[in-house]
Length: 256
Image (tube, rainbow, N blue to C red; front, side):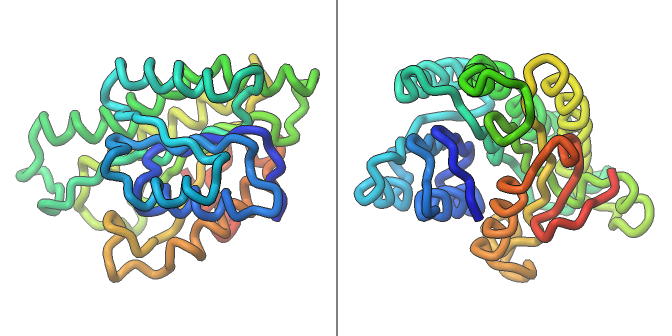
């Protein structure tokens, strides 16, 4: 696997697959010169802080995607860290899944639904919008809009967002999470057209699999290590042919 880029950013990086992205990226044969790990509360992100001790290229930035002021400050801090460098890879991993109930019609309310959409959809779009100038700078550094990994936006999607699979075999639960992730998937499809056309930026929808994390639970089928190893292989091999595709960590294409 080879992902030789100057700068990358991972949101929701303090735990779960976000943390595993950071762990594996700093261990690459050619890690990013600057790797920005964004999380809501850096002061409590002990695992990230420990990683910075042996990886001076890793920088922790505060970012709550529900707060516009946080997004603005995270952009300014990241811009200062990168200097003249553009941002080659933006991995939008921050997400929310309320598992306090089954998420059925009789259980949901406006507040629960809105929080899922604020984080899983609107928050992701606002981060991409704010960081777009840094992604465009990465394209400009190469002097070309050809897709060769100079600028990528990765949206961490979910198999649960597939309308095809939900209709065919999905359980009648998780209205809040599934609806928000389906909206995020549609946003990714639309961005893949807009950003490719306007800026030569590649957008990839990536399902990490059923991963044993706090969100995935102990009964999930794969480890974070296996999931992110597969995800990084896909990111490294991505091209114009995969932009806008919905892929899972194994490389299989999923239906929308």
